[in-house]
Length: 255
Image (cartoon, rainbow, N blue to C red):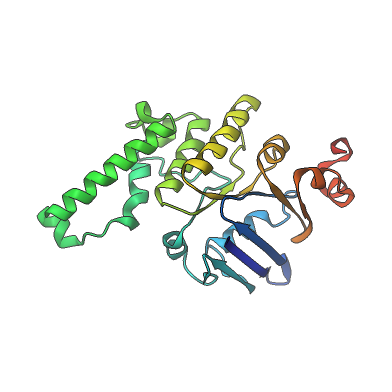
């Protein structure tokens, strides 16, 4: 069943077309990769999907609802969350508070309930604390829960960012270069983590990544962008043997 539909998505900046007529269909449970050279338009696609950019033209549907033109928080509330190529944690907050703050849009109590400490406020706050602790435990960060995000090692910051995205209770998770800056062992562990998280939380995953071992080992389907245009789409085996992809990006050694 389709959960995300992108039709003829185009993003122009003045006279420059960063993305041209991009199309995508994600079905529930998919793990799909988006690859291409630096500057190919991959992050621009993510920014359009999540409301950071308003597309010049095209349509985006999330669970059947048109979302292009909505603001980022509205799209998050409808079930799509993301991480960023450059980690964007609240670095002066603890690991615990970075996750807890992401639950904010799910609470249903109002300001008077919080001021007066009414029962509903107490129940929902306890639920948020429990869910925050659960995510910290899942990602192996519980012992670091009171440490500032800025003090965590790089790999743990990446994990914390994914955990924070999951706190938004998404159905579609967008990962922008999750393995950036990781060594081969960390990348291998991340690959296992993404697969496990996808199954645990019943997610559909769309990711940008330059590490071909992660992409080829994890993704069921891959799209390739070059100068904003989709030049190929297929299984990992099909992408590896596609001459246009090899010439644009992968290199002859991929054949």
